Length: 296
Ligand SMILES: Nc1nc2c(ncn2[C@@H]2O[C@H](COP(=O)(O)OP(=O)(O)O)[C@@H](O)[C@H]2O)c(=O)[nH]1
Ligand SMILES: [Mg+2]
Ligand SMILES: [Zn+2]
Image (tube, rainbow, N blue to C red; front, top):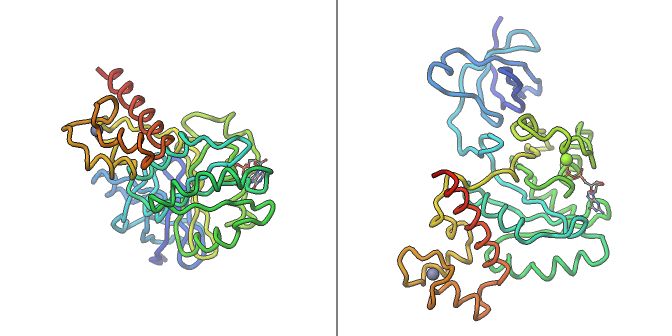
């Protein structure tokens, strides 16, 4: 007997889709052939209808329209991205932070800046130094130490009812956050296996874990994302503060690098634009230009 159920794809492995059903079961599913014919590939995060065959298996018969889709890793229906970096150990790189923010901006997703290891001596000072820069752009940031109980409640509140993707380099505390959100989740903390396995598998494999009332995914591939599909002119729009000043720039097609009288450079010189943000912008811009040059 076939019973139709609703659910969400939480994992995909070589043609099998693991669907967490609303009834609380997990079914190993194949997708109906019609999807392939139509060129539709089911994604982790997809809301689906399945026809259960017994208690373990099923067939995906319908995929609900996607609200959005995050690239690399491919995951559908994401509510928000947590950009995770440690304040210390390793020391915070503002370039890395700004680049990851730009990546999320490019995908048009809400983000929360989660700055970890806040209990380490000197970490809060680092947090306080950068906080005003990001608050001024309407970004939310939290100082977190699950080890010392700093920021736990805020983190829990922000996870509520959401599908969250964790983005960040290895060693910053993503798995620790995942274990907080999903007690008992089978993820290794402080594991070097991510590095050892670097390659296709680790950058594309993604799994959604069910939290109390939402989902969460780690995303090892995210930081390898590049802006390869973008033109240099588009980078300024991924930096909220640069964009605001760029709107005042009178030079057409200005990339705000060397032009005398450029509004962005003036804002930097007059201290309205954080020098670190301008530096990050220039660096991302150069990466995009270099990548473009290599293509031709
Ligand atoms: N001092 C300190 N260490 C932390 C904190 N959170 C995680 N760590 C440690 O940082 C290392 C990397 O953590 P992990 O969660 O595996 O990071 P991931 O590589 O981003 O998944 C581990 O040794 C953790 O115990 C924290 O708040 N404070
Ligand atoms: Mg990890
Ligand atoms: Zn300019």
